[in-house]
Image (cartoon, rainbow, N blue to C red; front, side):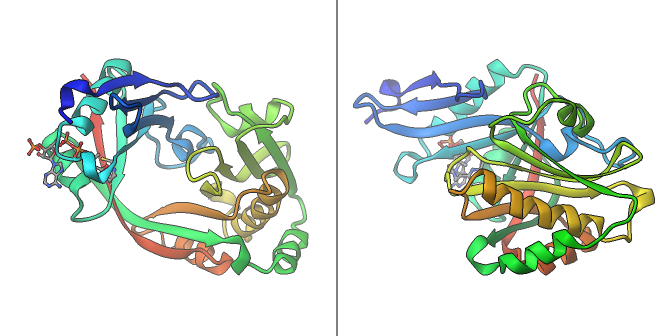
Length: 267
Ligand SMILES: CC(C)(COP(=O)(O)OP(=O)(O)OC[C@H]1O[C@@H](n2cnc3c(N)ncnc32)[C@H](O)[C@@H]1OP(=O)(O)O)[C@@H](O)C(=O)NCCC(=O)NCCS
C-alpha cells in the first residue's frame, strides 16, 4: 500500500494528552505518536539541582515493523511539530536501533544515557514492602495522593488538591509541612499492566535517612491498591546516579537494557 493512503489523525486520550495515529485505508493503525510531560522535572523538589524547562515533553513514537521506512515516522513527527511549536522534545531509544538513525536524521541531539529497569510485582514480597513502610521516621510523615496531574507544576501543588480517581499516584514524605521526598507513578499508557515510576527524589538536606526507600516502598504498596491491574513498573535511571541504582536494585528493579536520550527543540 502506498503512503498516500495513510492519514495522520489526531486522537487525544481521555486526559487530553496529544496522540496521533497513522491510519491506513482499511482502518489499520500503522503507527502512533504521543506526547506527555517529563514528570521528574516537571515535579522537581524546590532545591533539586537539575531542571529542564517545564515545557519539555516526552515523545513516544512507534511504527509497526511492516510499515517502516515509508516516511510514516517522519509524518507523525511533523504532526507533533505542528502541534508543539517551540517546545522541547525528549525521546529515548535503544543503542544501535532504527530510532537512533531516525533521531539523528531529524536533528535530535544526544543528551545522555541510562538504563531501563523493570520491577514485577510477583517478584516482590508484599510483607517485606509493608515492613519497609512501617519503619519509623521521626519528624517525617507519609502522604499519598492520587489523581490526574492536569496543570500542576510541583508536587506541593498536586498535594494541595484532594485525591480523586486518576492515572497518577504520589507517595511523599513531609517534614514541617513541606515535601522533602517523593516518588510518582503514572498508569494509563500501553501496555495497561505496566506503570511508569519517576523518582524517588529526596531534598538535599534530608538525604541519608532512607526516605527514598520509605516513599518508594509506600508507592509500590499504594499503587497496587489503587490500580490492581498493574503488574509491573518500569523506570529509567540516568548513568552515574549510583544511589538511585542501588535503591532500585534493593527494591527489586532489574535492568532491561540501555537507553540513549535525545532532545530536539521544535522550531
Ligand atoms: C524509529 C521509527 C519510529 C521510524 O519510523 P519509520 O516510519 O520507519 O521512519 P521513516 O520512514 O520516516 O524514516 C525517516 C528516516 O529515518 C532514518 N531511518 C529510519 N529507520 C532507519 C533504519 N532502520 N536504518 C537506518 N536509518 C533509518 C532514515 O534516514 C530514514 O530516511 P530514509 O528512509 O529516506 O533513508 C520506527 O523504526 C520504530 O517505530 N521503531 C521502534 C520504536 C522506537 O524505537 N521508537 C523510539 C522513538 S524515535
